[in-house]
Image (cartoon, rainbow, N blue to C red):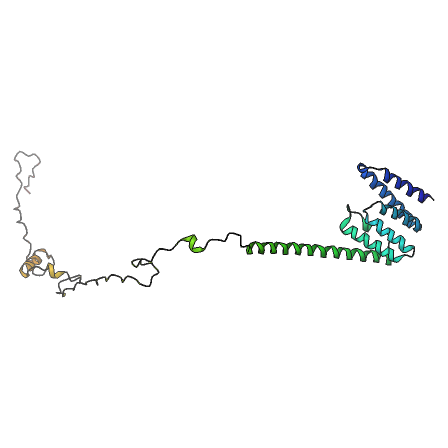
Length: 265
């Protein structure tokens, strides 16, 4: 009886609250969920089912409410309805929850086959959500590619100018340009070969062997005279005249010299 009174009071509060009392409504829905969990673990499955159903009818977005109502259905022998609630709770947890709820912690006391059934639905919901995300990304990519192709195929789109118009007409080839790419090329000018002067015959008088003594040769007489004058090592060089010997003179000694040698030496 107390469960029905609590449910009626909670519903009255929900209907009496205005749009500005969203926080109060959330607290009422949380209270209904709390009463339902307490009744379920107390073995009062029918009361738990009524609490959870009232919270769901009032628009709760808590996935735990669907999970626990499914548990209440399982305990009441209604497995098909329990499976529907498990699926709804998994979908709401993956996509539609208004915030993050501690679902694993709340279901910690639930074990066995029922917990395995809940986890299976949660895994399938996550896989389905991932598949939808991948498909949506692929669809957006294909749309972008299709839009790009339509723009490229649009005949009204200004076409780019031809390359010839952009760079202009190239000038004619200059045949005198040695770097031009024409087939005709200017023949290079002939360079005269260097003339090598003939070396004169070696007369034998050139001490350095450079062949330049021919132009500088002197007459034989002059050469002989020059050699006689400047060659100090020649065998037939005339002896040098020695200067005349100076006559030995006896110095005169003054007669009145007190230091004169009395022996006359």
